[in-house]
Length: 416
Ligand code: ATP
Ligand code: MG
Image: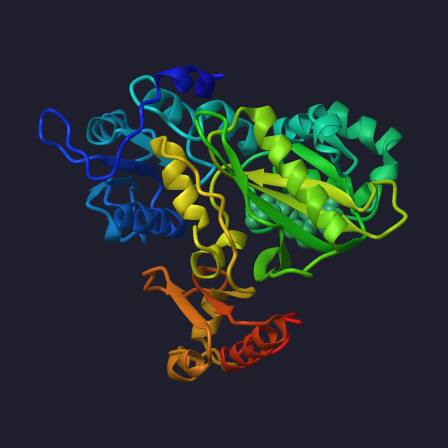
């Protein structure tokens, strides 16, 4: 695998160092969203210069980086510029063309590598990987079938009705619940495949979820592994709404299994960088032993944003350390935390009028940490920022989260 090639060759890129030509140590990222922005912040805090490749002139990461290369992700000139400026390169979203990562890897260490990003980009390959490492990880994914052709659709309609009711998901380019259709009957399934354009899909059995959680793992070029405890996630309409990060957020035995499974999955990939593995917790007595792996993201993840305020090293710190070949700190969480995602809806009142959220009231609450991503155009469903609440004890954090959610106009949210 491409990552393996670099293990021997990877010499650490030290922050603050200067090369023979007098150029400062610079880390690069493909993609200019909020994950790239928080990566840039972490890299700069350590003393690195940064470069962002992103076509959008007003991107969250481009706005705060030393260099902003404003080209498409697969533009050869842009990629050459990025490689020229940077001693190591990462990505902030998984739909970056894997070929772009491969091109960069010809001349620079790239973490995570094109091969593993390629697996995470495609649900069919991703699930095959989960199945292949089920013995090592102790978990498998939901029962599923691949539907890429009309013949495969027919075979599922004829022979795999055990997967209904289910969710038909496009193999590629889905996020935040997009590219998914819930199907109850064979007729629904046939119609949904047409609705999704007849592209490659997986049909997944609908499982009785009692909870969802995710685990962040950091792995270095030398194979060093560190991880965070699992965080419990609440989704609303397919988008992450709340993350609960404290001891007791889920049964301890499940938490241990999830953490071990995520580490095993990262190891089996020969992964370098930060990997997020998402899990379903299913009703007891099911065939899955209570834990099912859903998907993975080859980058820091929305569910790990609390680590910025509640841990002594964040998921973005790990991303920086891993790609640059620095030792990975084993993060220590010092405070219980709840994270509330701030979607565009928060900038509108019940009658649809644009408003400024009442930040003075929110920030008066103890232990609130506001992160906005520099996006000026609030739209429904758009991730504008997040609010993390930390405190000395879980009950207090929950109480403040409840108050903050009410102030922000998110009254129905499960913060308990
Ligand atoms: P992300 O933004 O995390 O990348 P996504 O669009 O890739 O999301 P999934 O994580 O596959 O989509 O699904 C979104 C949500 O839909 C899940 O978090 C879960 O709440 C629900 N869901 C997905 N698959 C199943 C399933 N097999 N059974 C029950 N619920 C499911
Ligand atoms: Mg998901």
